[in-house]
Image (cartoon, rainbow, N blue to C red; front, top):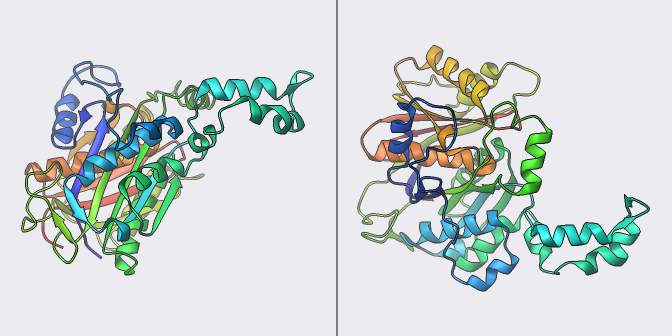
Length: 364
């Protein structure tokens, strides 16, 4: 099923907004220098606008990013929100470190963590609202509550491929008639001390991963009535009669466990194309977690889409669950700007799996 993308939103080291993101990445690809966030980018906003600032007390940084990005997306789209689907790739828990330290300190007995002491004293030592920061699904739920999203939904834990799974779920929800419109994407903060420690402990930082944060979302489905219009001139939108930004031709995941990455890419692309050949692709956007993986994705592209321009999202750093979605939005920007007609987005996160998304300009 070909599903139209009618709007997009992003929060990244490039700033707030999706238009221009792909072109910035294309320009940075031409600059010499080590991987990392280019100095000229403004950075992710520290203060993020939300419908209810009081809600921040219950929100992790990832949840703030997701909620702000969702609000940005929906300012350009007038939908029956109670019926809209929402599928989000989310990262690890990102609770207040002050509360986490207090909880752990009160739970130590004889130099070791004690479940008995945790239940008796640890939980009482932290703010009860910490639970809403720690539960992974609330990265999605906070924004959904603020914006009144009530359709089919799922929060999928992601270190890369899980975010492509969120897009697959959104497409299937529309194809299966569960909803007419859906939102999909990812939000994450790899800068939280616990997450950074995990990435360093597992050796990813030493192999070139640059922790970052961000969020990106796409709105899928029909733009016109009944119940769904795009507001003229609004951020991320156009007129209800305007064509979609692009069309999703296919999306899929393949396991990269215990086999060459090129084989996993072959399988993911084949699944996304439902067994058909890739066809003419003039743009490949890659979202690798470090230089070695980027080199493998480039090598596959050279062998299978030699005439395509390659854009690497590594200059944004790795925002884990958000990185694949940021790469989709970068591809959408280049399609909308007339820089490409068909794009393949390849995401290879620290989970070892590969996600493939095929996008094209044109009608569904």
